[in-house]
Length: 342
Image 1 (cartoon, one colour):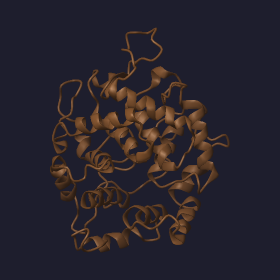
Image 2 (cartoon, rainbow, N blue to C red):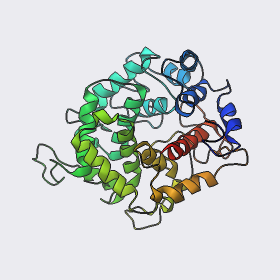
Image 3 (cartoon, helix red, strand yellow):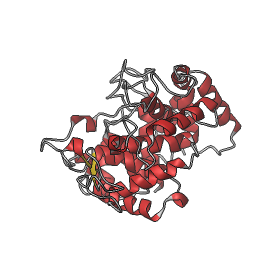
Image 4 (tube, rainbow, N blue to C red):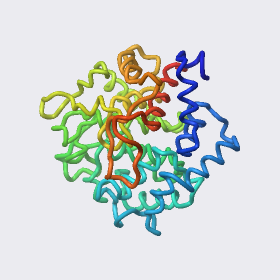
């Protein structure tokens, strides 16, 4: 998959760079996602185990309390970006696995016990009113990516699907309704109170990324309807322009064009491409300009730079801003691989 598939003579060198021993987690994800090593590949499993003993995964897990939370007990949204919510999202992005370390499984269980309501809402405060698309999508994706098999996750996915389509959910004003929208998750099709009640594309990207991670056989009819509507929304404009609804009527956030790592609720255009290609849209002509934009950010070495970061705010550092970065490069190559193979 080096020469003909990638159609870029620089790619073999980039893959060699990603496979270097300095960041075992990058090496493992490169084997899994770019080289398509089989699930029973012994070398890949050895590198996975190594990534949980040293590097970013090991560092984050070293700060986890014995009960399975970070910093302080409870729903785990605050303080940003080292509490339970953010630690779990970051662990998922750097290749952690419940199978590789029992501490990851304990953290997933703690999150479900304290941040998920009976109605399926992942919440900032442990109550249904604390739900919002970006958090719901991020955590559903993270738990799926970590390999969490808890059946409670199905309830969260179904709630998330119905919030997109509006099926069986009353308006926020109907406070006596058994199932309703809230101040932040205020309506169908990614409507968000933080965005003035308009559809939030940052939230949409998270929700669709989570549905893309869900195996096809687990996509119920409501989930598939939500996927169809979400794809239509994200492709209702040229994604490269990022001209999605903005609550104050202003211009799109400049952060859309800053490719970063990790990715929390601030979203970049690369994540929109990740979500849509994971859902099988890699060959859609409406993605052409966005794919060109992604390719245009390659350095002469065929790599991508870290343009948005959380330096000093998370448990670990992932590279120096505005320099070539293995994590961002891995993200970009996953997208290009999906486009080529669509």
